[in-house]
Amino acid sequence: MKVIDLKNLSKKDYLRIMKRSFGTNENIIPQVREIMEQVKNEGDQAILKKYQTRYGSKIYKSIEVTKEEIDRAYKKTDKNCTKAFKQMIKNITSVHKAQLPKKIDTIVNSEKGITVWREWRAVGKVGLYIPGGKAIYPSSVLMSVIPAQISGCKEIVMCSPAGANGQIPAATLVAADMVGLSKIFKVGGAEAIGAMAYGTESIPSVYKIFGAGNSYVTVAKMLAFGTVAIDMPAGPSEIFIIADETARPSYIAADLLADGEHGEDSACVLLTTSETIAEETRKETENQLRRISTRERASEALKRYGLIAIVETLDEAITFTNTYAPEHLEIMTKNPLTIARKIQNAGSVFLGNWTTKSSGDYATGANHILPTGGMAKMFPPLGVEAYGKWMQVQKCTKEGLKNIKKTIETIADVEQLPAHKNATSIRFMRE
Image (cartoon, rainbow, N blue to C red):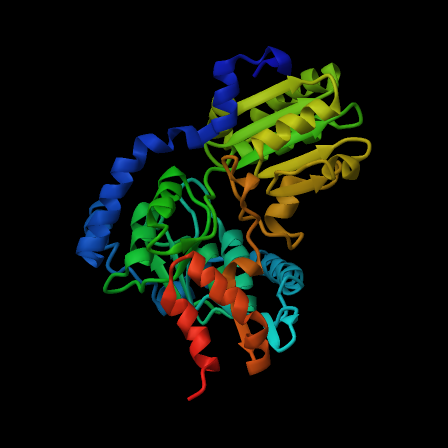
């Protein structure tokens, strides 16, 4: 990676950085739509044909995970891993319990005799997509399941891709079992989204689908929207760092690479007011890259959607950040909270040199399922609220309806809807 002045960023590179992997989504829409249609029309057979071809019918025998597979997973999982899961479960639970809305929202008397309020209801059936492929994500199981349970969802379905042995990774299954999940299916990619949207013989359809994934999963979720609801477009990972002269280049480089190792389509951006920090970070990134086993995909991510740029002021960095709308935003400056208060668009914000991206990925209790590709402009991070909805309730007494009768009749006349007018008027006619 080269260090550049942000003001010298070409229009072509500006668009590449801003669009990141979302810029390629349009190219795969026809392929994803075909996969979704196959699952819709053929159900289990569409899934079995693909995965039995990939793994072999002896290895990939069933779509649903069995109790025997979970028992084997525990034997393969180190005790330190399950101990770490327990701390994660504790912290994620405490953070998300605080997000649970009141069962009944504020009651408003808009007129004498009229009462309006909202009541909270959980989404009855939800589908959780847990990514796989190049890495293993048991943490995403906990981030998805725990808020669903806290919200009160009655039916929770999980889909996750199998590994080379035709099985979901052991740690992922253990995490799912530790939080009491029972409906687990060995399906990944667009097939999984299609199955949860339309239902198959094995996989029940749901009302809302959650979870991050690659570009195919992201496109599939967007195509499924309308048949089902979705949490957000959560695609390939991205990190954006704002730094001044107080930042540590070794920390910045480590965090850029921590995101880059997710995959070749990850995005890694640094804006700094210090030319020294920029150059030292570039060198640190190259040095640390040599020492990690995931160097190939991290290196490719830096080439595709990476940027180290110098800005004249922190306000310039803030303006660019709000346009970019990053999934993860780290602020390594003298007064990070001051900067954070000027940020309008970001999924999750990390303040100071000691709040690493991986702290939020795993253990602070904050949710790591976040909007990507600029969608933080309009979508929030995943939380308990996403698993529920408000139902509106209203009540009029006879006096209350009388107080708004004239307004109803007037607007019904304006909109030329006589039955609307009559529905109120008839209640005040003498029998």
